[in-house]
Image (cartoon, rainbow, N blue to C red; front, top):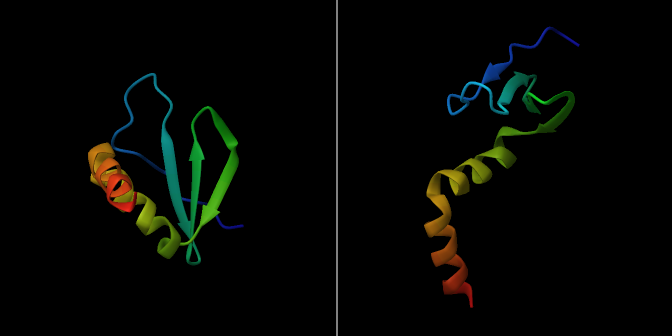
Amino acid sequence: MPRLDWRKSSYCQEGSSCLYLAASAGTILLRESEVPGTILTTTPARLRPLIAQIKAGPSARLLRREAIR
């Protein structure tokens, strides 16, 4: 496996658990600072909706849930 360029989340604060991301051949790799040996893999197409939901915030998710009921 080639050497990965891990990038730390800009939301990471000193002393807290941090999320790191790297890309390799069309795959996104994610790991958490407290368990760096555990790496999750996904694709940009699958990660994009998750990031959109996180950016939308809890109120957007709550409104959508209410609309479904």
